[in-house]
Length: 289
Image 1 (spheres, helix red, strand yellow):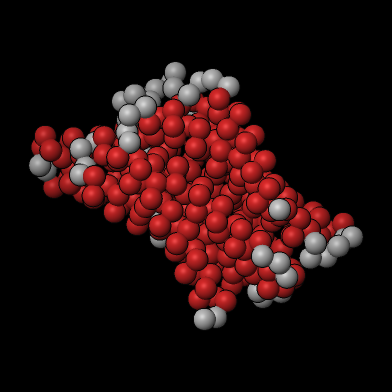
Image 2: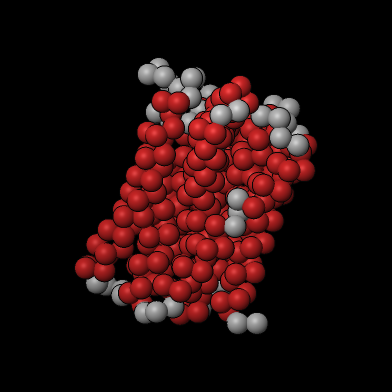
């Protein structure tokens, strides 16, 4: 099996199976799920921070050691990855939030419920409208809301795939086994994200089997991200630095702009901070032991 094919397979396991497992846990154990998911998201966010900062960015900087221009290139591409995912999420929020009743001027400027994280609350609003009217217009709006929800989920999963693909590309160029470690971490990271997807779907009345299946499918964009990350990473040292930096920036937004704020708002206590610290330290152990 070629390295590229192996990357696709291992990413499918980390993305689809990891997310599907989280989806299954979400529909089976929904009691007090927000506190559980809060801790799991914080822990996963801490692990990803250690992987990005102590592995991916260091590999990106190592492509042209001692070059000041290269440092600024890595910093710039990390910022580009961060800002692109932020802008895409901001566009979705601006289009959907006014249509959801519980999101008003007093609402936090980020998601504070599981349903908001994947925009299933927006989908549910259009579902209610369609069930009340059965109009063709409402049906079309419901379909659009479903696409928006799918795109919002993809924005979380695509960068994760890029991280895996770029890590394997770095292993080919520089040697090492960080790709496998990263894939394992992403797989674990996807479990709480799968729970975040399936819990609001099941709470909205969807059957457990269907909610688990749809949750697993949402992990598919991870594969596309891995293919892009690996392809860019194997072209040249500069493209590897680009792939690693962009993937790092995109992943940093998912963690710092979405997962950790969401986790803290779901359980307003110090517990998510301790879970994030635990995740960061576990990430260090995974990388260096």
